Amino acid sequence: MCFVLHSMLLARPRQDSAKINPSDRAALLQKIDRRAEHFTGLSHQIWEFAELSYKETQSSQLLKSELRNVGFQIQENVAGIPTAFTASWGQGKPVIGILGEYDALPGLSQEALPEKKVRNVAAGHGCGHNLLGVASALAVVAAKDFLAEKNLRGTVRFYGTPAEEGGAGKVYMARAGAFQDCDVVLAWHPGSQNYAGWRNSLANISAKFRFRGKASHAAIAPEQGRSSLDAVALMNHAVELLREHVPESTRMHYVITNGGAAPNVVPDFAEVYYLARHPDMSTLDGIWARILKCAEAAALATETRMEMEIVSSVHNVLPNDTLNMLLDRNLRHVGGIRYSVEEQTFAEKLRTTLSIENAPSLGSQEQIQRAEEARDSGSSDVGDVSWLIPTGHLWTATFVPGTPLHSWQATACAGMSIGSKGMLVAAKTLALTAADLFSDSGQLEGAQASFKKRRAGHEYRSRIPANQKPPLNYRDK
Image (cartoon, rainbow, N blue to C red; front, top):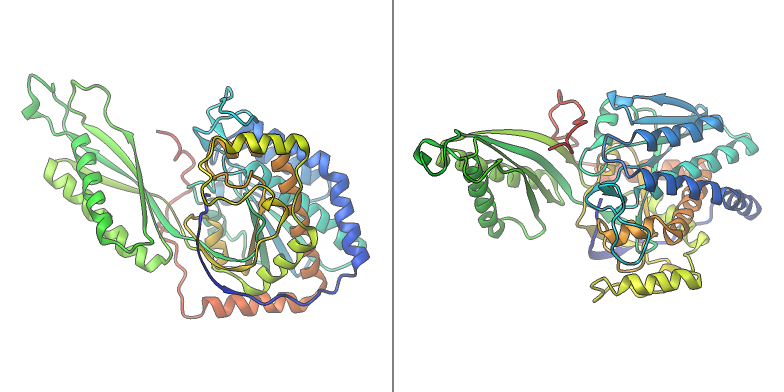
Protein backbone atom coordinates (compact mmCIF):
# COMPACT_ATOMS: atom_id res chain seq x y z
CA MET A 1 0.00 0.00 0.00
CA CYS A 2 1.46 3.32 -1.04
CA PHE A 3 -0.31 6.46 0.14
CA VAL A 4 0.49 10.05 -0.87
CA LEU A 5 -1.25 12.96 0.83
CA HIS A 6 -3.37 14.69 -1.79
CA SER A 7 -5.49 17.38 -0.11
CA MET A 8 -6.46 18.70 3.30
CA LEU A 9 -9.99 19.65 4.17
CA LEU A 10 -11.85 20.19 7.45
CA ALA A 11 -10.13 19.75 10.84
CA ARG A 12 -12.00 17.69 13.45
CA PRO A 13 -12.63 18.47 17.14
CA ARG A 14 -10.56 16.86 19.87
CA GLN A 15 -11.95 13.89 21.79
CA ASP A 16 -12.89 14.12 25.47
CA SER A 17 -10.88 12.08 27.99
CA ALA A 18 -11.61 8.36 28.28
CA LYS A 19 -12.43 6.37 31.42
CA ILE A 20 -9.06 4.67 31.90
CA ASN A 21 -7.16 6.23 34.77
CA PRO A 22 -3.61 7.53 34.16
CA SER A 23 -1.93 4.80 36.20
CA ASP A 24 -3.58 2.06 34.12
CA ARG A 25 -2.53 3.76 30.92
CA ALA A 26 1.04 4.07 32.16
CA ALA A 27 1.09 0.41 33.21
CA LEU A 28 -0.13 -0.71 29.79
CA LEU A 29 2.62 1.25 28.05
CA GLN A 30 5.27 -0.07 30.42
CA LYS A 31 4.30 -3.64 29.59
CA ILE A 32 4.71 -2.92 25.90
CA ASP A 33 8.14 -1.47 26.61
CA ARG A 34 9.11 -4.66 28.42
CA ARG A 35 8.14 -6.70 25.36
CA ALA A 36 9.69 -4.28 22.87
CA GLU A 37 12.96 -6.12 22.33
CA HIS A 38 11.26 -9.45 21.72
CA PHE A 39 8.72 -8.09 19.23
CA THR A 40 11.39 -6.04 17.48
CA GLY A 41 13.18 -9.32 16.90
CA LEU A 42 10.03 -10.78 15.36
CA SER A 43 9.76 -7.84 12.96
CA HIS A 44 13.36 -8.38 11.89
CA GLN A 45 12.66 -12.06 11.23
CA ILE A 46 9.71 -11.23 8.98
CA TRP A 47 11.84 -8.58 7.25
CA GLU A 48 14.41 -11.30 6.54
CA PHE A 49 11.72 -13.68 5.22
CA ALA A 50 10.43 -11.04 2.73
CA GLU A 51 7.64 -13.29 1.47
CA LEU A 52 5.33 -12.24 -1.36
CA SER A 53 1.53 -12.04 -1.21
CA TYR A 54 -0.23 -15.31 -0.40
CA LYS A 55 3.19 -16.94 0.06
CA GLU A 56 3.84 -15.59 3.59
CA THR A 57 4.17 -19.07 5.10
CA GLN A 58 6.99 -18.40 7.55
CA SER A 59 5.71 -14.94 8.48
CA SER A 60 2.19 -16.06 9.31
CA GLN A 61 3.48 -19.14 11.14
CA LEU A 62 5.72 -16.98 13.30
CA LEU A 63 2.84 -14.71 14.31
CA LYS A 64 0.47 -17.63 14.91
CA SER A 65 3.02 -19.33 17.13
CA GLU A 66 3.64 -16.16 19.11
CA LEU A 67 -0.04 -15.54 19.78
CA ARG A 68 -0.84 -19.18 20.46
CA ASN A 69 1.90 -19.28 23.09
CA VAL A 70 0.24 -16.49 25.09
CA GLY A 71 -3.21 -18.04 25.07
CA PHE A 72 -4.90 -16.93 21.86
CA GLN A 73 -7.20 -19.32 20.01
CA ILE A 74 -6.09 -19.65 16.40
CA GLN A 75 -8.35 -20.18 13.40
CA GLU A 76 -6.23 -21.10 10.40
CA ASN A 77 -6.80 -21.23 6.65
CA VAL A 78 -9.46 -18.51 6.75
CA ALA A 79 -11.30 -18.19 3.41
CA GLY A 80 -9.24 -21.07 2.07
CA ILE A 81 -6.08 -18.95 2.23
CA PRO A 82 -3.18 -20.89 3.82
CA THR A 83 -1.56 -17.75 5.25
CA ALA A 84 -4.76 -16.09 6.54
CA PHE A 85 -5.74 -16.58 10.18
CA THR A 86 -7.41 -15.06 13.21
CA ALA A 87 -6.21 -15.17 16.82
CA SER A 88 -8.82 -14.46 19.51
CA TRP A 89 -8.74 -14.10 23.29
CA GLY A 90 -11.57 -13.41 25.72
CA GLN A 91 -15.31 -13.98 25.83
CA GLY A 92 -18.36 -12.25 24.42
CA LYS A 93 -18.88 -8.71 23.29
CA PRO A 94 -17.49 -6.33 22.32
CA VAL A 95 -15.18 -7.87 19.77
CA ILE A 96 -12.32 -5.52 18.94
CA GLY A 97 -10.21 -6.51 15.95
CA ILE A 98 -6.75 -5.27 14.99
CA LEU A 99 -5.48 -5.87 11.47
CA GLY A 100 -2.03 -7.28 10.75
CA GLU A 101 -0.24 -7.60 7.41
CA TYR A 102 3.07 -9.26 6.52
CA ASP A 103 3.51 -9.46 2.74
CA ALA A 104 6.56 -8.06 0.97
CA LEU A 105 6.95 -6.50 -2.49
CA PRO A 106 8.76 -7.93 -5.53
CA GLY A 107 11.92 -6.19 -6.71
CA LEU A 108 12.65 -4.31 -3.47
CA SER A 109 15.42 -6.42 -1.99
CA GLN A 110 17.67 -4.22 0.12
CA GLU A 111 20.03 -4.41 3.07
CA ALA A 112 19.28 -2.27 6.14
CA LEU A 113 21.76 0.33 4.91
CA PRO A 114 21.44 3.96 3.74
CA GLU A 115 22.90 3.13 0.32
CA LYS A 116 21.46 0.79 -2.29
CA LYS A 117 22.65 -2.78 -1.72
CA VAL A 118 20.43 -5.75 -2.53
CA ARG A 119 20.18 -8.90 -0.41
CA ASN A 120 20.13 -12.48 -1.64
CA VAL A 121 16.32 -12.44 -1.86
CA ALA A 122 14.14 -11.03 -4.65
CA ALA A 123 11.60 -9.20 -2.50
CA GLY A 124 11.67 -6.61 0.26
CA HIS A 125 9.45 -4.92 2.83
CA GLY A 126 9.24 -1.59 0.99
CA CYS A 127 5.88 -0.90 2.62
CA GLY A 128 6.94 -1.95 6.13
CA HIS A 129 4.49 -4.80 6.55
CA ASN A 130 7.01 -6.66 8.68
CA LEU A 131 6.43 -3.84 11.19
CA LEU A 132 2.69 -3.69 10.56
CA GLY A 133 1.83 -7.25 11.54
CA VAL A 134 4.15 -7.34 14.53
CA ALA A 135 2.93 -4.03 16.01
CA SER A 136 -0.66 -5.23 15.74
CA ALA A 137 0.25 -8.53 17.39
CA LEU A 138 1.96 -6.68 20.24
CA ALA A 139 -1.13 -4.47 20.62
CA VAL A 140 -3.53 -7.41 20.95
CA VAL A 141 -1.26 -9.05 23.53
CA ALA A 142 -1.26 -5.84 25.59
CA ALA A 143 -5.04 -5.50 25.19
CA LYS A 144 -5.47 -9.11 26.32
CA ASP A 145 -3.48 -8.41 29.49
CA PHE A 146 -5.60 -5.31 30.15
CA LEU A 147 -8.83 -7.30 29.78
CA ALA A 148 -7.57 -10.01 32.11
CA GLU A 149 -6.30 -7.65 34.80
CA LYS A 150 -9.47 -5.54 34.80
CA ASN A 151 -11.71 -8.62 34.55
CA LEU A 152 -13.59 -7.05 31.65
CA ARG A 153 -15.86 -8.91 29.30
CA GLY A 154 -14.95 -8.80 25.63
CA THR A 155 -12.84 -10.37 22.91
CA VAL A 156 -9.67 -9.02 21.35
CA ARG A 157 -8.82 -10.47 17.95
CA PHE A 158 -5.79 -10.28 15.67
CA TYR A 159 -6.54 -10.61 11.97
CA GLY A 160 -3.65 -12.10 10.06
CA THR A 161 -4.38 -10.68 6.61
CA PRO A 162 -2.14 -11.72 3.71
CA ALA A 163 -1.76 -10.21 0.27
CA GLU A 164 -2.64 -6.58 0.92
CA GLU A 165 -0.34 -5.62 -1.94
CA GLY A 166 -2.81 -6.17 -4.75
CA GLY A 167 -4.20 -9.53 -3.66
CA ALA A 168 -7.22 -8.25 -1.67
CA GLY A 169 -6.81 -10.83 1.07
CA LYS A 170 -9.19 -9.01 3.42
CA VAL A 171 -11.97 -9.04 0.81
CA TYR A 172 -11.91 -12.83 0.68
CA MET A 173 -11.70 -13.07 4.47
CA ALA A 174 -14.73 -10.81 4.76
CA ARG A 175 -16.65 -12.97 2.28
CA ALA A 176 -15.88 -15.97 4.46
CA GLY A 177 -17.47 -14.23 7.47
CA ALA A 178 -14.27 -13.48 9.37
CA PHE A 179 -15.50 -10.01 10.39
CA GLN A 180 -19.20 -10.68 10.87
CA ASP A 181 -19.16 -10.69 14.70
CA CYS A 182 -16.61 -7.89 15.02
CA ASP A 183 -17.77 -4.56 16.51
CA VAL A 184 -14.79 -2.33 15.70
CA VAL A 185 -11.58 -2.74 13.71
CA LEU A 186 -8.35 -0.82 14.28
CA ALA A 187 -5.60 -0.56 11.67
CA TRP A 188 -2.33 1.24 11.10
CA HIS A 189 0.33 1.62 8.46
CA PRO A 190 4.03 2.52 8.39
CA GLY A 191 4.82 5.96 7.02
CA SER A 192 7.21 8.89 7.39
CA GLN A 193 4.97 10.93 9.74
CA ASN A 194 2.78 10.34 12.79
CA TYR A 195 -0.83 10.92 11.89
CA ALA A 196 -4.30 9.70 12.93
CA GLY A 197 -7.01 11.41 10.94
CA TRP A 198 -9.60 11.23 8.23
CA ARG A 199 -7.51 9.94 5.34
CA ASN A 200 -9.65 8.53 2.57
CA SER A 201 -8.05 6.34 -0.10
CA LEU A 202 -8.67 5.36 -3.70
CA ALA A 203 -10.87 2.50 -4.78
CA ASN A 204 -9.19 0.30 -7.35
CA ILE A 205 -9.75 -2.51 -9.84
CA SER A 206 -6.96 -4.63 -11.31
CA ALA A 207 -6.93 -7.33 -13.96
CA LYS A 208 -4.69 -9.28 -16.28
CA PHE A 209 -5.52 -8.87 -19.98
CA ARG A 210 -4.40 -11.83 -22.06
CA PHE A 211 -4.24 -11.73 -25.85
CA ARG A 212 -4.00 -14.88 -27.97
CA GLY A 213 -2.90 -14.63 -31.58
CA LYS A 214 -1.09 -16.81 -34.12
CA ALA A 215 2.61 -17.57 -34.17
CA SER A 216 4.66 -17.33 -37.33
CA HIS A 217 8.18 -16.67 -38.56
CA ALA A 218 8.61 -12.93 -38.19
CA ALA A 219 10.72 -12.59 -41.37
CA ILE A 220 9.71 -15.42 -43.71
CA ALA A 221 5.93 -15.37 -43.13
CA PRO A 222 5.00 -12.32 -41.04
CA GLU A 223 1.66 -12.01 -42.88
CA GLN A 224 0.56 -15.34 -41.42
CA GLY A 225 1.09 -14.20 -37.84
CA ARG A 226 -1.32 -12.36 -35.58
CA SER A 227 0.72 -10.65 -32.90
CA SER A 228 -0.59 -10.71 -29.35
CA LEU A 229 2.17 -8.26 -28.45
CA ASP A 230 0.80 -5.81 -31.02
CA ALA A 231 -2.54 -6.10 -29.22
CA VAL A 232 -0.92 -5.26 -25.89
CA ALA A 233 0.91 -2.31 -27.43
CA LEU A 234 -2.28 -1.02 -29.05
CA MET A 235 -4.26 -1.37 -25.83
CA ASN A 236 -1.59 0.51 -23.92
CA HIS A 237 -1.56 3.29 -26.52
CA ALA A 238 -5.34 3.60 -26.32
CA VAL A 239 -5.18 3.87 -22.53
CA GLU A 240 -2.50 6.55 -22.80
CA LEU A 241 -4.88 8.57 -25.00
CA LEU A 242 -7.68 7.90 -22.52
CA ARG A 243 -5.75 9.68 -19.75
CA GLU A 244 -6.86 13.04 -21.19
CA HIS A 245 -10.51 12.08 -20.84
CA VAL A 246 -10.84 10.75 -17.29
CA PRO A 247 -11.30 12.67 -14.02
CA GLU A 248 -8.13 14.30 -12.72
CA SER A 249 -7.97 12.12 -9.60
CA THR A 250 -7.88 8.92 -11.69
CA ARG A 251 -4.76 6.75 -11.63
CA MET A 252 -4.03 4.09 -14.27
CA HIS A 253 -0.98 1.82 -14.17
CA TYR A 254 0.14 -1.20 -16.17
CA VAL A 255 3.05 -3.58 -16.63
CA ILE A 256 3.63 -6.06 -19.46
CA THR A 257 4.01 -9.43 -17.76
CA ASN A 258 4.49 -11.49 -20.94
CA GLY A 259 5.57 -10.05 -24.26
CA GLY A 260 6.64 -13.15 -26.18
CA ALA A 261 9.73 -15.32 -26.18
CA ALA A 262 11.85 -14.32 -29.19
CA PRO A 263 11.93 -11.34 -31.58
CA ASN A 264 11.92 -13.57 -34.67
CA VAL A 265 8.67 -15.28 -33.66
CA VAL A 266 5.36 -13.45 -33.93
CA PRO A 267 4.07 -13.86 -30.34
CA ASP A 268 0.89 -15.91 -30.07
CA PHE A 269 0.46 -14.94 -26.41
CA ALA A 270 1.00 -11.74 -24.47
CA GLU A 271 -0.29 -10.39 -21.17
CA VAL A 272 -0.55 -6.96 -19.57
CA TYR A 273 -1.48 -6.33 -15.93
CA TYR A 274 -3.61 -3.22 -15.28
CA LEU A 275 -4.55 -1.31 -12.13
CA ALA A 276 -6.95 1.66 -12.15
CA ARG A 277 -7.93 3.87 -9.19
CA HIS A 278 -10.40 6.62 -8.30
CA PRO A 279 -11.78 8.00 -5.01
CA ASP A 280 -15.30 6.82 -5.89
CA MET A 281 -16.02 3.23 -6.87
CA SER A 282 -19.06 4.05 -9.01
CA THR A 283 -16.99 6.54 -11.05
CA LEU A 284 -14.24 3.95 -11.34
CA ASP A 285 -16.75 1.51 -12.82
CA GLY A 286 -17.21 3.85 -15.79
CA ILE A 287 -13.46 4.35 -16.21
CA TRP A 288 -12.88 0.60 -16.09
CA ALA A 289 -15.52 0.04 -18.76
CA ARG A 290 -13.55 2.35 -21.06
CA ILE A 291 -10.30 0.50 -20.32
CA LEU A 292 -12.06 -2.72 -21.25
CA LYS A 293 -13.12 -1.14 -24.55
CA CYS A 294 -9.47 -0.27 -25.23
CA ALA A 295 -8.64 -3.96 -24.81
CA GLU A 296 -11.51 -5.09 -27.01
CA ALA A 297 -10.56 -2.61 -29.73
CA ALA A 298 -6.94 -3.78 -29.64
CA ALA A 299 -8.03 -7.38 -30.11
CA LEU A 300 -10.31 -6.39 -33.00
CA ALA A 301 -7.60 -4.42 -34.76
CA THR A 302 -4.97 -7.16 -34.46
CA GLU A 303 -7.30 -10.12 -35.07
CA THR A 304 -6.39 -11.66 -31.72
CA ARG A 305 -8.58 -12.96 -28.91
CA MET A 306 -8.73 -11.12 -25.57
CA GLU A 307 -9.41 -12.61 -22.14
CA MET A 308 -9.65 -10.59 -18.93
CA GLU A 309 -9.15 -11.98 -15.42
CA ILE A 310 -9.99 -9.69 -12.49
CA VAL A 311 -7.17 -9.99 -9.98
CA SER A 312 -8.34 -7.62 -7.30
CA SER A 313 -10.63 -4.76 -6.42
CA VAL A 314 -10.79 -2.74 -3.22
CA HIS A 315 -12.99 0.09 -2.01
CA ASN A 316 -11.86 3.45 -0.73
CA VAL A 317 -11.48 3.74 3.06
CA LEU A 318 -14.61 4.96 4.88
CA PRO A 319 -13.33 7.18 7.73
CA ASN A 320 -14.81 6.90 11.23
CA ASP A 321 -14.99 10.15 13.20
CA THR A 322 -15.13 8.64 16.69
CA LEU A 323 -12.34 6.13 16.17
CA ASN A 324 -10.05 8.59 14.45
CA MET A 325 -10.46 11.13 17.24
CA LEU A 326 -9.71 8.42 19.78
CA LEU A 327 -6.63 7.26 17.89
CA ASP A 328 -5.46 10.85 17.54
CA ARG A 329 -5.69 11.46 21.26
CA ASN A 330 -3.83 8.28 22.11
CA LEU A 331 -1.17 8.93 19.48
CA ARG A 332 -0.55 12.32 21.09
CA HIS A 333 -0.32 10.65 24.48
CA VAL A 334 2.32 8.22 23.17
CA GLY A 335 4.24 10.87 21.18
CA GLY A 336 6.67 10.57 18.29
CA ILE A 337 10.21 9.19 18.17
CA ARG A 338 13.62 10.75 18.65
CA TYR A 339 16.62 9.49 16.71
CA SER A 340 19.82 8.37 18.35
CA VAL A 341 23.12 9.72 17.00
CA GLU A 342 23.51 6.63 14.84
CA GLU A 343 19.95 6.89 13.53
CA GLN A 344 20.41 10.58 12.75
CA THR A 345 23.52 9.74 10.72
CA PHE A 346 21.62 6.98 8.90
CA ALA A 347 18.73 9.37 8.17
CA GLU A 348 20.97 12.14 6.86
CA LYS A 349 22.82 9.77 4.53
CA LEU A 350 19.60 8.15 3.31
CA ARG A 351 18.08 11.53 2.47
CA THR A 352 20.95 12.25 0.08
CA THR A 353 19.48 9.47 -2.10
CA LEU A 354 15.99 11.01 -2.12
CA SER A 355 14.28 13.85 -3.91
CA ILE A 356 13.29 15.75 -0.76
CA GLU A 357 11.82 18.91 -2.24
CA ASN A 358 8.71 19.76 -0.15
CA ALA A 359 9.35 16.65 1.96
CA PRO A 360 8.86 16.62 5.74
CA SER A 361 12.00 17.75 7.54
CA LEU A 362 14.21 15.65 9.74
CA GLY A 363 12.82 16.06 13.23
CA SER A 364 9.20 15.85 12.09
CA GLN A 365 9.16 12.23 13.28
CA GLU A 366 9.06 13.65 16.83
CA GLN A 367 5.80 15.45 16.13
CA ILE A 368 2.16 14.38 15.74
CA GLN A 369 0.52 15.90 12.68
CA ARG A 370 -2.86 17.61 12.84
CA ALA A 371 -5.81 15.26 12.46
CA GLU A 372 -7.57 16.61 9.39
CA GLU A 373 -9.66 15.39 6.48
CA ALA A 374 -7.43 14.24 3.65
CA ARG A 375 -7.40 12.16 0.49
CA ASP A 376 -4.65 9.69 -0.32
CA SER A 377 -3.58 8.51 -3.75
CA GLY A 378 -3.07 4.91 -2.68
CA SER A 379 -5.35 1.95 -2.07
CA SER A 380 -5.78 -0.80 0.48
CA ASP A 381 -8.13 -3.69 1.17
CA VAL A 382 -8.65 -2.08 4.59
CA GLY A 383 -11.15 -0.03 2.59
CA ASP A 384 -13.49 -2.99 2.14
CA VAL A 385 -13.37 -3.76 5.86
CA SER A 386 -14.24 -0.13 6.62
CA TRP A 387 -17.45 -0.42 4.57
CA LEU A 388 -18.52 -3.41 6.66
CA ILE A 389 -17.40 -2.46 10.18
CA PRO A 390 -16.41 0.80 11.95
CA THR A 391 -12.68 1.11 11.22
CA GLY A 392 -10.07 3.49 12.62
CA HIS A 393 -6.66 4.01 11.02
CA LEU A 394 -3.36 5.69 11.91
CA TRP A 395 0.15 6.15 10.53
CA THR A 396 3.44 6.31 12.40
CA ALA A 397 6.93 7.46 11.41
CA THR A 398 8.73 4.21 10.67
CA PHE A 399 10.60 5.69 7.71
CA VAL A 400 13.00 8.62 7.49
CA PRO A 401 10.90 11.73 6.73
CA GLY A 402 10.50 12.13 2.98
CA THR A 403 10.96 8.42 2.20
CA PRO A 404 8.43 7.19 -0.38
CA LEU A 405 6.74 3.87 0.24
CA HIS A 406 7.53 1.04 -2.18
CA SER A 407 11.18 2.10 -2.38
CA TRP A 408 14.48 0.49 -1.43
CA GLN A 409 14.93 3.30 1.09
CA ALA A 410 11.71 2.24 2.85
CA THR A 411 12.91 -1.37 2.90
CA ALA A 412 16.15 -0.25 4.55
CA CYS A 413 14.31 1.69 7.26
CA ALA A 414 11.89 -1.18 7.91
CA GLY A 415 14.82 -3.45 8.71
CA MET A 416 16.52 -1.26 11.32
CA SER A 417 15.83 0.63 14.52
CA ILE A 418 14.10 3.65 12.96
CA GLY A 419 11.38 1.32 11.74
CA SER A 420 11.22 -0.51 15.06
CA LYS A 421 10.75 2.71 17.03
CA GLY A 422 7.85 3.78 14.86
CA MET A 423 6.38 0.30 15.15
CA LEU A 424 6.26 0.62 18.94
CA VAL A 425 4.46 3.96 18.68
CA ALA A 426 1.78 2.19 16.63
CA ALA A 427 1.53 -0.75 19.04
CA LYS A 428 1.08 1.56 22.02
CA THR A 429 -1.52 3.71 20.29
CA LEU A 430 -3.52 0.69 19.15
CA ALA A 431 -3.39 -0.94 22.59
CA LEU A 432 -4.52 2.22 24.39
CA THR A 433 -7.37 2.65 21.91
CA ALA A 434 -8.50 -0.94 22.34
CA ALA A 435 -8.44 -0.48 26.11
CA ASP A 436 -10.56 2.67 25.77
CA LEU A 437 -13.10 0.80 23.66
CA PHE A 438 -13.32 -2.08 26.13
CA SER A 439 -13.72 0.34 29.03
CA ASP A 440 -16.20 2.81 27.59
CA SER A 441 -19.31 1.62 25.76
CA GLY A 442 -19.95 5.23 24.71
CA GLN A 443 -16.94 5.06 22.41
CA LEU A 444 -18.34 1.95 20.74
CA GLU A 445 -21.73 3.60 20.30
CA GLY A 446 -20.05 6.66 18.83
CA ALA A 447 -18.10 4.51 16.37
CA GLN A 448 -21.27 2.77 15.24
CA ALA A 449 -23.11 6.08 14.84
CA SER A 450 -20.28 7.54 12.76
CA PHE A 451 -20.21 4.42 10.60
CA LYS A 452 -23.93 4.60 9.88
CA LYS A 453 -23.77 8.33 9.08
CA ARG A 454 -20.79 7.98 6.71
CA ARG A 455 -22.24 4.98 4.90
CA ALA A 456 -25.82 6.28 4.63
CA GLY A 457 -27.04 6.29 1.04
CA HIS A 458 -24.05 4.35 -0.28
CA GLU A 459 -23.87 0.78 -1.51
CA TYR A 460 -21.05 -1.65 -0.82
CA ARG A 461 -20.48 -4.32 -3.44
CA SER A 462 -17.15 -5.89 -4.22
CA ARG A 463 -16.18 -5.78 -7.91
CA ILE A 464 -14.40 -9.11 -7.55
CA PRO A 465 -16.72 -11.78 -9.04
CA ALA A 466 -18.67 -13.57 -6.32
CA ASN A 467 -17.48 -17.01 -7.40
CA GLN A 468 -13.82 -16.04 -7.73
CA LYS A 469 -11.40 -17.75 -5.36
CA PRO A 470 -8.40 -16.00 -3.80
CA PRO A 471 -5.71 -15.57 -6.50
CA LEU A 472 -3.04 -17.43 -4.56
CA ASN A 473 -0.59 -17.36 -7.48
CA TYR A 474 -1.27 -13.89 -8.90
CA ARG A 475 2.35 -12.86 -8.37
CA ASP A 476 3.46 -15.67 -10.67
CA LYS A 477 4.16 -14.67 -14.26
